[in-house]
Every structure is written in C-alpha cells, then in structure tokens.
Image (cartoon, rainbow, N blue to C red; front, side, top):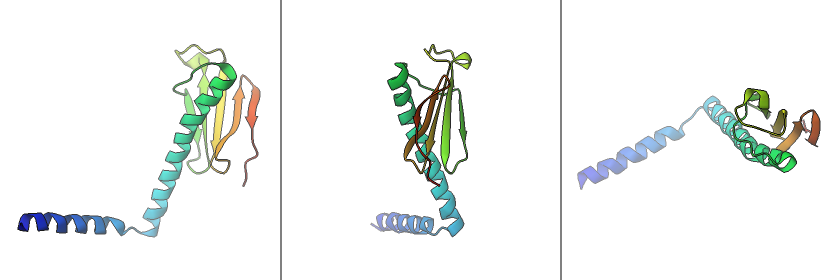
Length: 118
C-alpha cells in the first residue's frame, strides 16, 4: 500500500515540476509547435495540390526551405529525383498567416497565389 502511494506522490511531483517553465522555455516550445504544424500542413496540402494540377502523386520533396517562423517551401525537382513526374519543377509554399498554400508554381506557371498578410 505504501509503495502505491509513493508511486502516486512521485508522479504528481514529476508532473508538477515539469509545468514550471520559464517564459523563454514556453516561447521556444511554442515556436517548435508552430514550425511542426506548418511542416505538417505543407506535407498534407502540397502533394494534394500538385496531384490536382498534374495528376502526379508526390511523396518526398527534393528540398525544403523555411524561416522556422512564418513559412515552409517544399520543392520537387524531377532532375534530382528517382521518381518520374510529368513536371520538371514544383514549388509549394505554406504561410502561417494564410493557413494553407500561399503559392504553388509548377514548371514556372503559377497555379495558386494568395496574399500573405503581414
């Protein structure tokens, strides 16, 4: 019985101790969550949009660019990929303020363009 109580006490102490974060730690955690959410959104929406316009199913971009705060750009370059695409180059940008794709360019032709709020 004492062992069970001790486990609960230790558990409560561990949870309580983890909640005490400095403002800087909270800001850093929020930045990591925002970046992960943008990346997740780009991984979901960009391949769907490319498939809509080209009919090609894309999986892994050949490169990714981000400022870790406001945008993620994924690039599919057919010349650098083993996958066979009907396009040569596709760039898809997701902005946090847009809440989705702000720019999609396939082979130099803009397919989606939305104003980015600042």
